[in-house]
Amino acid sequence: MAFELPKLAYEPNALAPFISAETIEYHYGKHHQAYVNNLNGLIPGTGFENSDLESIIRKADGPVFNNAAQIWNHTFYFDSFSKNGSKVPSGRLSDAINASFGSFESFRELFTRSAATLFGSGWTWLAVKEDGSLHVIQESNAGNPMKNGLKPLLTCDVWEHAYYIDYRNRRPDYIKSFWEIIDWEIIGNRF
Image (cartoon, rainbow, N blue to C red):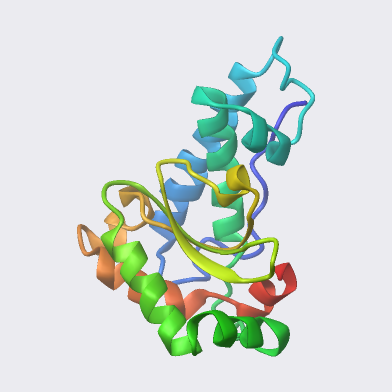
């Protein structure tokens, strides 16, 4: 199975000024594409040749895992955005956030702190355990909560390539802008 770079649901300039078209060009067009190209070069002749990304993430390690997870993680990340989307969770997701964190504001503070303090490169996730409880998780490098049996709902990419063009080394400013483009209707549908 050959993987392809998934299409964005919006134009490259649609998220400006929070994420610029130039960042989309490099982050999506170059980095995300490189993971697709790398995985397509790694899996022929392996047991993963006909697997989907989620199966590879759950079973692989090393370069095959890293590239498969980075394709999935980036697709999930980019699919969470809409400049005009719902700015707060509602319904069951809102109830679950309140039950797990006390309030949306408390969740947002915890998630922001987690993303800001993750050492090096990686991802901060909102994920669901089997019992339905929500957790904020830091994952280094290509880490993905599916590897540990959790269901991802939201992620923030804190690799420098996600924000360096627009924010240089100011990760907290990038995270503040991240909240402006999350579409909570999309996140709620994942729940």
